[in-house]
Length: 94
Image 1 (cartoon, rainbow, N blue to C red):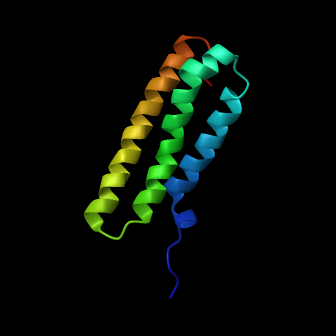
Image 2: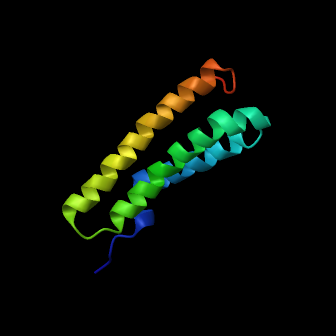
Image 3: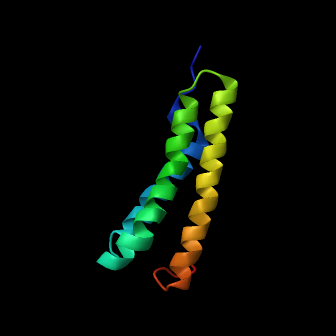
């Protein structure tokens, strides 16, 4: 019998890849942009995969679900920081 591993979860793998993608963009911003928007954006985007991982590590169903909801909240927060970054001309629409 094979047990499910964290890296078997496609949502986790995609969230982790997205966080690294965003990091690679933000690392090149100037100091002020990094300090104001960048730190918040990276924190929100990193929380997506982190909460999936924490939920995966929990044993109780309610506990797991709670962290998956936190992950969804972090995703929505990331959308907000993405929009702010676009409005402030830090990133393009692509």
